[in-house]
Length: 209
Image (cartoon, rainbow, N blue to C red; front, side, top):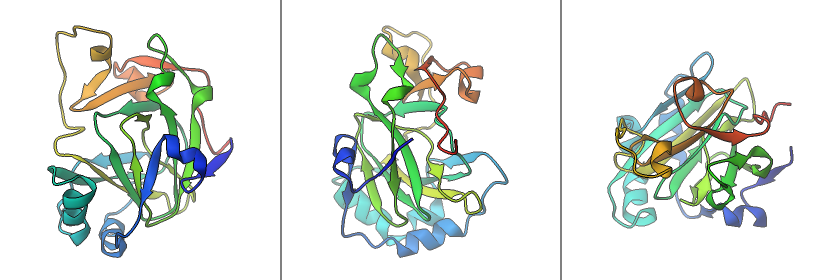
């Protein structure tokens, strides 16, 4: 699979790089959190990250004064498994280089998305990456298996916290997996086994292959 850079023109359909932020303190705080032995962890908001000055800068500038949570996704991963979207952009900042697997919401047809539409983008450590609300994304992939990945995740406050609805009124409601989180799973994923909507068709992409 070809891996583009977030600095390539191809990324402009999915997001942008935000310049001018000092990420050194945030990276140090991220690196103080141990990696899991395998798999992926995620916390929507982490106190040690939100104490860093960049948290206030992102809230006041990148999110225009909106309430913000700054958490982290970290561990080891090379697979697609699922794609999700929010009603708002997401900010990603890696302590190490990482890869995002992305598609576009308009590529969902009749509740399905062919994984051949997915593109891969590498982000260098410390780069502030905005992933647009119209871009489908999920857990980052590591570049170096020995180092794994630590990616700070900035989102509107409350996103990805527990929330389900019992009375869907349309097809999109069936994708609602958490607060401000619409999820489409591949049949091979753990999320599908837990009851997530299966809408990814084709190969479950693995960038290690």
